[in-house]
Amino acid sequence: MLHRFEISLADVDRGVYQDLDLRVARHPSEDNAYLLTRVLAFALEHQEGLAFSRGLAEADEPALWVRTGDGRVIEWIDIGAPAADRLHRAAKLAERVVVWCHRRPDMLQQRCAKEKVHKGEQIRLVKVPTALLEALERKLDRNNRWDLSRHEGLVTIVVGGEAIETVFEAVPLLPAPE
Image (cartoon, rainbow, N blue to C red; front, side, top):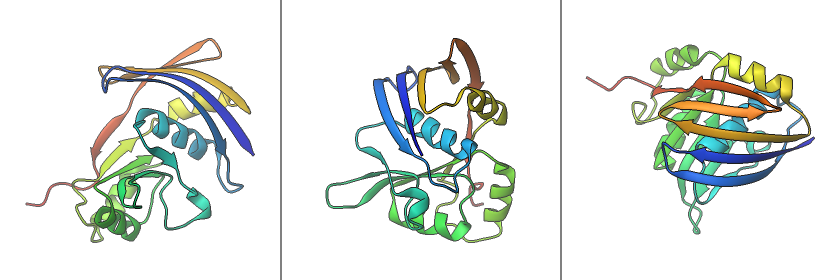
């Protein structure tokens, strides 16, 4: 299934102002929360060259990434709770790794703490609030229009005449080594 997201982005914190027109293919195994987290990550991580990968259809690719012309991975942005070995490989491959976790980020941190994850303290973990995803899911349609802004950490999404406000907590995946 294909979803369209027209997003007017005003990310004051990063100085990014952009009108995004996204057509997001939804994998059959992908639930609404995962889809919405991918779209939120795309908007709030938006930069030149950011693209959706083949995602769930290709196990060796993140949901989103920024690559150079010669194929090097600059940014690796994963969704959900990827395995520790996947994050280990990603941290060796990419200059920056971010995980947008929409279910139990504490469990991901605990699991990764037991494994070897290259530069685990440099991997950023963004905790996606469940209440936000539930509110957006109620408004989800094939065609979606969002006004999304971030100012001083507060994210506001106006969809269908309703303003939804939240804050995303971003922490290191693992504590710094002693």
